[in-house]
Length: 298
Image 1 (tube, rainbow, N blue to C red):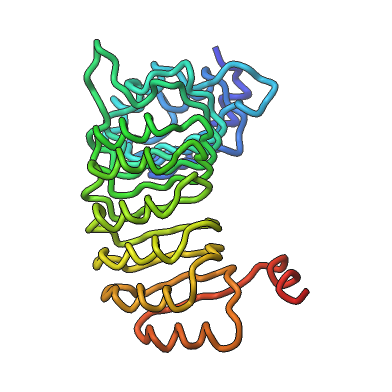
Image 2: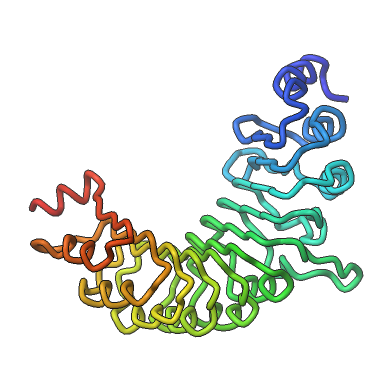
């Protein structure tokens, strides 16, 4: 049994919000008993989004998330669509345990096993409704994970940040399954111009593309994006190897483009003004952090 004092404290925090669709429990220390009572008795049936923080970076060893709790989430909350897990060790939890109602899965600084995302032989359920996969600093996420999850879902959003195991080979195996992808973010992945070529060839319905902090992508790769005529927003933050002329040429060829992010890239003279003039219907940003400004003035 959970202590009465603990129950009352959680009741004050959660019961008053029983009609909330969004519940963020990341500021609180949880164990499986407390979370069990929350999902069974105190969180309202209209729940759509749940954010939880595990104990991966804590002295505690036992995670609070169990198959039984996930099963309750699926049964009690028919509109439960968004699960956000932080610092959670998922190595002992099967992918099949996740609620089939999920449309968005967000993992931040989590650990997953080698075969995660792959349905077991005894249970064929997969996340067919999953549309958005957002990963931040999930170091164990590999090319194999990427291929499996893309092949068994219809993703509209894919954000890969801090997933250094992902490279051109992984992207090549994934893109045939990403025909409907609309939003794509890449940061701290081991990709080259080959990935930009694959994006240009396969992702014909892409609306947003974010490339962050890639210092080795070149104009040859950027030119491949000219074929993505649906592109509305493009981030090239801290991508220093793209020339201003190539940026202008590619962006002018994108009829739907209305936002271009060039933050952190230094342009000499009036170059940034010339880029803006070439794109009269597009908002172009070119701002710098305090550290950038110090380096720029040296």
